[in-house]
Image (cartoon, rainbow, N blue to C red; front, side):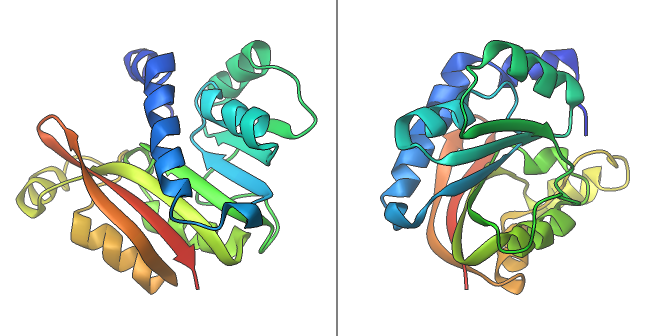
Length: 195
């Protein structure tokens, strides 16, 4: 789903990317980082996180976003590096080959994906066996989801139980989970491994 200009202004802030990088570094303590060579970031925005991972860890990084305008800006402002690629992708229909990625990142993206369960299937498809998935996003209380569900068609709506169940049903093992303070909303951080 394409974001509004206000949403883009909020999510493309450098300090927001720095917070996401801190969460990734925390997650890296839970995984075998030496087994990571290729990274797919869903919803890369203007590419700060993807660029950091390519520069700091020398990973081959694919920063993707559904919004072509975001990718155009990213290609203009981020450095050109052999191991860093930015492209338009739909999270529910990725162009990557089966079992071709070691790590997938989705930070504050799933609530923008109406078909978020299909996105989990695609992530499981492109990840190699034993690959990792770092997920950070908002979850809703059951009664709030029930209120908004009939009216909201362009956003992903899910409870903590919905997302946990979907991860487990698609073959992911939870290595780490925490609730992250985020104002009136519940935000959760997961580190998962594809079994």
